[in-house]
Amino acid sequence: MLDINDIAKSRDEALLQNKVQPVFMLGIDIYQLQASSGSVIWWYTQVAWAHDHIITVCYFEALMDTIPSFMTAQHRHCDDSFIATESAVSASNWIQADSQWSIFTTDLDSHLQQEETILFPAFEQATGMTMGPTQVMRTEHAQMRQLIAEMTQALSAQNKDQFLGLSETLMILMQQHNMKEEQMLYPMTQTHLPDAAAVLEQVKAY
Ligand SMILES: [Fe+2]
Ligand SMILES: [Fe+2]
Image (cartoon, rainbow, N blue to C red):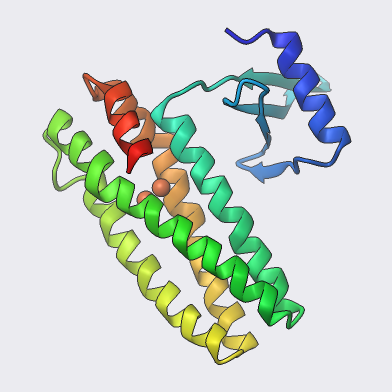
């Protein structure tokens, strides 16, 4: 078990070295940290009203080696190369854009395949829900792939306006998709699978 003082030290060092940026989502600042043990830790600060005072509630969620932590870390990892591509395209730095886009599409494709071939079937088998959330997720994956194909064409044509227009659509789609997975599907999968640890190993080995 990680010591809370070690987690706080990791957070402070990461913030000082500008290694993490807060992500504002649903009124919560979320910092993703990499602990020395290699596990992913989420540090939340939430501003709340208490009587007449604003209080800041800080808490940690040390997500160890679980399906939600592993898959969520992949989302953040993909976000990084996606944002880097957008910045490079905005600056007409096409070499950088190509290399970041290649990282993004490779990583995202592997993530979607892990979900479609391992995680979703395991969820469907454990819950008996074959036409529920996993079907919605598969449909959204198809929408993402379509947008990515169009963006790849826009990038090879160095069409900045078209690429950035499509990237805004993809960004919104991915944010909503990832939120549904992170808040509902992944936790449900972790809870319902009789052998969640073994399924996670299969995902990692994919
Ligand atoms: Fe997905
Ligand atoms: Fe996902």
